[in-house]
Structure formats: structure tokens, C-alpha cells
Image (cartoon, rainbow, N blue to C red; front, side):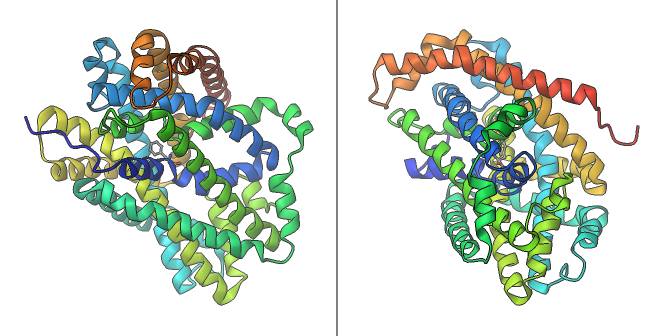
Length: 443
Ligand code: PHE
């Protein structure tokens, strides 16, 4: 059997994992949800969720991946719990499900990047979204995005993410600095950064599940992505240190994106505009595009930079979703990496045409993934690490970390107890939400 690949360096792993984590979740969804779920109050709950639930959970996936040194499906078998391979398979399928429409949004972003350069949406931003988000053009751009994703998976994730992640950071910082110079930015910062705790208390039932799912999605949990990436790691890496750094970087990028988007919206509209507050997949595209459109030539430059960042971030996440199935097939059947990546890219392109054809499908795919598949998959992973694998997980996480048993055991108990309860409650709320309003298109 061919030798399995490994990361060339620790930095390579960290950047790839950050690339996976930082994506549309951070730059598109996070500012948007912040805008609609109460501003700074949402940010606070999100930060708590990322640290208290997200960090222990991502460490659990790292443990599974590194210990097994195998793809996310067969990992469970190698850890001597073959019945749990079904959980790995579920994660893989959830990831593919998500990639099918993630790529459609990636296509929109590409379209908006070009549209910013030419000023195509400047005259009528809302109508523009309607015309590019569905139909043949959306299908074509979705295809281009998927092809690029497959190309990177085929020819080298580590090299690509080494370039991509630093450029995301640099461009976002630049944009945030620019946004800070806008007139009237104070009200935006106030909305974004000074939390109203009364609002949290009154809306706890809706903020918490959103914030927690957002944290899981943003950290790429529950889809085998982090298991797969950690499977290419050696034993001398500290999972605690790497996991902590990845969570901090990912959260910082979300916060930075908010520092760009919220001021742009406020400065143009004096508040969160209706298009954003009204929700729906296109809300942020429409309102951010409106903001750029009012800025003339400067808006073109900013638009290219902004949608450029979003595109790079989306690509570096999409590749980690496609890598899960690619690793499985390459490990298991020994097929070539390029053939595998492009074949699955083709299948997912076909599935995604539904979402590209009509955004009602996209919303449906997304709500099922977000409300049910994702929390369910994270929950099963947490049960596995905490209660099934238990002591062996402590043993694994200590390797290369220089920390003692007490610290590692504290982590295990956090996973066994409150993380598990937190994920369970999120799943419960997600399911009841969908049950209350099943948004199945065209039925
Ligand atoms: N974390 C990515 C984002 O924030 C999405 C993603 C989820 C990528 C799961 C891989 C796995 O956009």
C-alpha cells in the first residue's frame, strides 16, 4: 500500500485547518446573523459557544483523526469501534450535502467579484441578486467554483492554504481599517460591540441555538473535516495548542469580518437595512452590494477586495469538505487523488444544480444541515469521544502536549458533561424549529 501523506509542517496543518474553519460561515453568515440576532448580544453568546463548546469538541475530532491516522469513516473501525463507522459516514454525507450548496454560494461570490470590477450591480443591486442567484448563470458559476475546489484537492491543499490564509487575514485587516475611517462608524461599533444583556435574557431561546450552530459550522465540526486533517498529523504536535490557536484565529476572522460589514451597512443606511433584517440567503449580498454601489469608484475597488476575500475563504473551506470523501476513497480503494476529487466534484455539482436553480432549495438544504444534520453529527462525535473512547482519548490528547493527566481529564469531563448537554439542547431546538416550520420547497 502506498505511504499515507502527512503535513510537511505544523504550520501547514494549522493554516489548512484555519482555512477550513474560516469561510462563508465567518464572513457571510456571522455578520449577517449578528445583524439580525441583536448585534453585540449575539457576538457575546457566540464567543462563549466557540470557547466553551467549540474548542473541546474540535479537540475531540483531532483526537479521533490523529489516533486513527485514517480517513473519517474508517477511523472508528481502526479505533476498534466498528459500529461507529456509521457516525463517520454520516459526517461525510453531511459534508457532501453542505458542499453541494456551499459551492452555489461560492459561485455567487465569484459573480459578485466580477460584478464589482465592472460595476454591473451598481445600478440595481437588489434586482442584480435576483438575476444572478438562480438559473443558468448560477449553475455555470457553481460549476466553476466546484471545479476550482476539485483542482485544489487534487493538486495540493497544503501549498494552496499557505497562500490563501495569510492573504485573507491581510485583506480583511485592510478592509477593517478602511471601514474604521468612515464617517458615522461610531453607531456601528456601538451596535456591534456593546452588548445589551437584557436582550440576551429575553431572547435566549433563539440566540443560543443560532450561536452554537454557528460556532460548530464555523469550526468545521461534525463533517469529518477536522478528523481528516488531523489524520495527517504526527504525534509530536500539541493538540491543545493547535486547537486553541485555530479557534482563536477563526473567531478573530469572524469578528474582523463584522468590523468590515457592520460599519459598511451602518454608514450607508444608519442601521441594519431591511434587506439584511428580512433574512434569506441573499440578504447580505444585496445590502453590502448596495453599500458599495453608493461609493462609486471606491466601491468598485472595495467590492473587488471584499468579494475577493470571501471567495478565497469559501474555497479554502470547500476543499476541506471535498477532502473528507477524497481521503476515504484514496485510503480505501487506492484510486488516484485527482480522479477521485474530480469525480465527486462532478456528482456534487449535479446535486447542487437544484440549489443553483432556485434559492428555495438552497434554503431548505441549509436549514436541514444547520438545524439537524450538523448538531446530530457533532453530538454523536462527542458521545463517542467522551463516553465510548474515554480514557484512550485522554492518552492521545496528552501526546506532544506537555500537559499532565489532570488537564487532559478535565477536558474529557467537559466533553462528557456540559458539552454533550449543550449540543443536545441545540439539536433539540433545531429539530423543533424545523418541525414547527418545515420549509420544504414546492410541496
Ligand atoms: N467552516 C466553514 C465556514 O465557516 C464551513 C465548513 C464546514 C467547512 C464544515 C468544512 C467543514 O464557512
